[in-house]
Length: 108
Image (cartoon, rainbow, N blue to C red; front, side):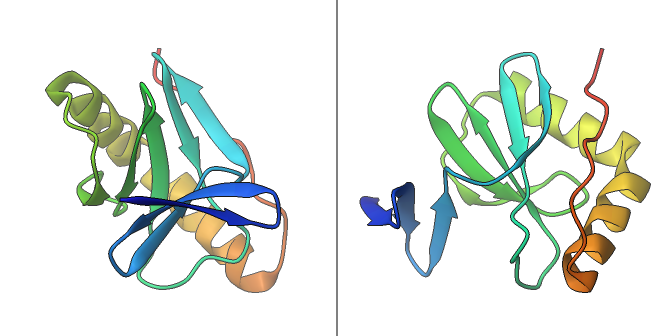
């Protein structure tokens, strides 16, 4: 992994993927920060951070890129994504329409 600077935003270069640390936060729960960027690209995904580790996840909650290794954190992210699939889909539609992202309820 390689750290990059992009207009004052820290990023991690993960092969062909760049995970940005300056994206809008859409949810926070149990020390996990969930983000989506308003200029995202296909396929549909969101970003998560846990204990300084980062990952990119599909809407089923599966990590596709990243270095989050905690089974507990991965299980919580997967559970959150599955419970909030409609809200993730709505935020993705907002991205494509150029509209603001909505906060999504955390796990409790």
